[in-house]
Length: 316
Image 1 (cartoon, one colour):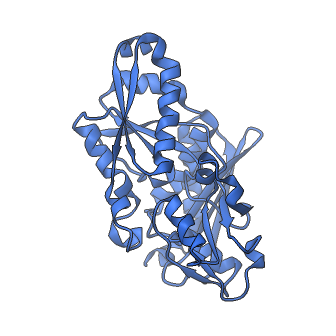
Image 2 (cartoon, rainbow, N blue to C red; image 1 turned 180 degrees about the vertical axis):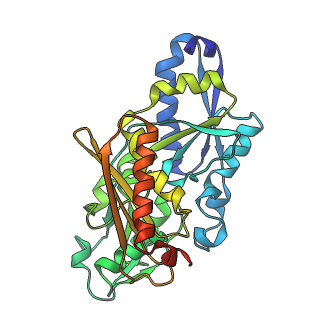
């Protein structure tokens, strides 16, 4: 019942990077359009997270992607904010009991993008070229595609990563296509990796809205923003990460796509200790009409990966 929001002020907690602010303003505009007629006002609360501050170490060594989320959750807990907007791939698979994922919006391009000032594609890179990424998922998949390349750490927000490329620190970098598209930087993309080449991270390209679990009125109102095809797809993907203890220290990819009424889930797992080790891959598919059925696909894929020897890969 949206009437329970009448006259309420909603505050969105967001990181202060240019991309995070774009995402928060996008949600702000959606909420203003939907609830403005009943007097709802929507404001932003910009915040700097630990993930934004620590740039000299990889996320897997300093606490994982949850570093981008925790301060925003504190703002929710202290009621300085009512909702937080996240890139869903940065959201831990299991939220604290006090919070819920209230909505996932329609998805932007979930693929990874090849960005370079001098080379048109990964195949065009010379032997020994330097490629920047701090994602273990991308590291192991790059090793499978081009074991001759030198993959080096790359941290910072999107603009910082592009600047480092432009300064000549790398011959190419790999970024999520969605962020570049959202900031009007799609022209920087030289090529997009097909999912058969490089599987995306669980939730990549999707925006998630987190709220306090006890804010029933807001949860009910936000349910109308859910994009069901994306909602089911990311439930399947996140079930894979949950089943394997997925975090940024696990080189795991999970991507679900629709073909007609069937959801097809593809997964890949690498070994963080030995990036060149053969990837374990598993697939699952089925008709999905609710989140439970979507998560069941993820559980099925996890069982296949474990049967293939995932435990040994995960020991790292």
